[in-house]
Length: 80
Image (cartoon, rainbow, N blue to C red; front, side, top):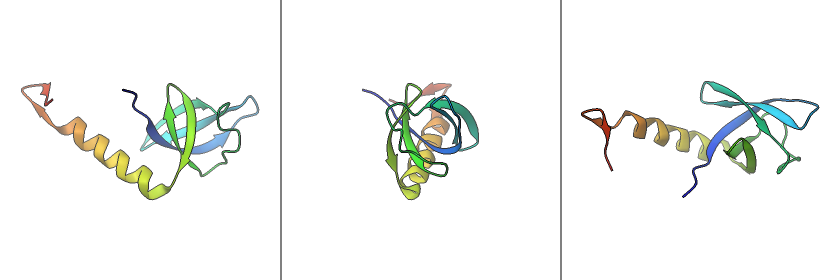
C-alpha cells in the first residue's frame, strides 16, 4: 500500500520542480507527472512526485488525520 501526503505548492522552479508545504514542513517535489500544477494548488505527493490535484478541504482533513495517527502511541509503539 502506498501513502500519498497532501502538500501545497508554494514556489515553482524552472527545472520542473516545486517547493511544497506539508503542514509546516517544506520539501522539493517533482511536477513531471502534473505539469499543469500552479502555485497555491494542493496536490497529493508520493515518492517526491505530485500525482494529482486535490481540494484544500480534503488536504487539510488528511493532514489532520495523519497528525492524529502520529500522536497515537502506546508504550512507544504504534497501535496497529
